[in-house]
Length: 126
Image (cartoon, rainbow, N blue to C red):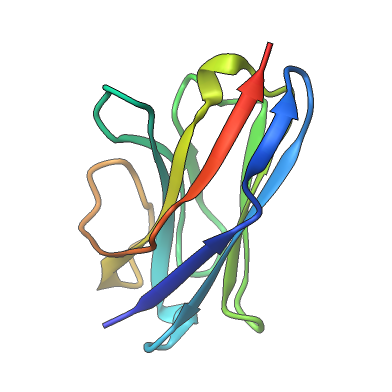
């Protein structure tokens, strides 16, 4: 089982930036992929970005491509989400998640995410 703790959320004006962090423990971090998801009030949870075990492959939702960047530091057991050019519609609780499958080459929205963090709130004001 993997334990995940997100941080870095907050209130930002439209056009601003935030960097979310997710600290992982409990399993060899460099063996599994990671994803970021978000859930806005009244909406279903949606995939934002994914990164494979090595950091060599990433995937993004169309709504964030060109604005968000997912990265990881396997030495520090952490994954990050750099969010630029934020929009009010990016307002949501953001969650990191760990893929159950080891060494998956490409982590996408339908990967088997088995562990989740508690979430961090991101609010973008217009």
